[in-house]
Amino acid sequence: MAKIIVFTDLHIVPEGERIIGLDPYEKLAKGIDHANRLNADADRIVCTGDLTNWGDPHSYRRLKEILDRSAIPATLLLGNHDNRGEFLSVFDDAKTDRAGFVQSSLDIDGWRLIFLDTLNAPPYDFPEAYSGYLCDDRLSWLDAELAGAPDRVAVFMHHPPHDIGFPGMDAIKLKNGDVFYEVVERHGKVRHIVAGHVHRTISGSHRGIPFSIFKSPCHQMPLDFVNVDPASSVEEPSAYGILLLTPHGVLSHSEDYEISTTDFQSDVAALGVGGLRA
Ligand SMILES: [Fe+2]
Image (tube, rainbow, N blue to C red):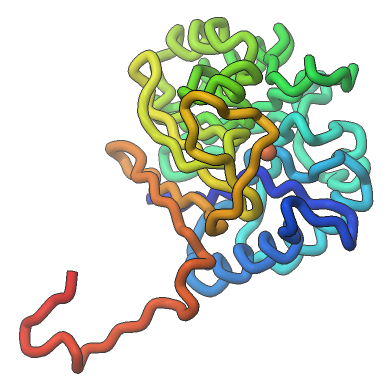
């Protein structure tokens, strides 16, 4: 069984800046320290995009500083707040496909993890580039990765490839999700899709394939099915996701790592003889 930790939408900013009063650097650092203490047996951390808020090299270097203290190796994906060139200038050992997109795959315990680059840039023209896009080059790469994969595949990407029920976010999802699903369905191997972008914990299925989206370590999106502006944010507890990949499927957990002021403890005396508290 493989254990994968998902941090999404980190939005690291230059020193001194904050987002709705929160310090993304400090919030992520706490999450990495938490994972080091309680989930150091994980096989991988996957960061599903919006690694920085402005796509600037200084923020990427600050992110590198935090990840350097992680006991678990990390794979980084790009989101609409990222800049591919600036990212690669700092993370110069990041894997790319032959066309230079930040796409790669990792085979682990009978699963293939496929990491997609849905950044719809260059050009970095906003608001157009808020949405995600997979060009023909990236879709061909995905097609080949699926062809050579075992029959258990999990796909990681920043932009959800389908609506999630928030009008503001649905307007800036992956633009060509239908084409993406056509490629996926051609192979019948994708058992789970993990996305970011929304800053909320959401799960369900689309076209028969289950998906998970997790909260950010920093600012979250308010739960509003009518008026959600993609720029609206709220302070709720920081979280990361934990996926357990078994021979039979995927178990998807969310860890709100700032709620508890202490790590879990076992108090055998308080259980009583044969007693359980859960
Ligand atoms: Fe984000």
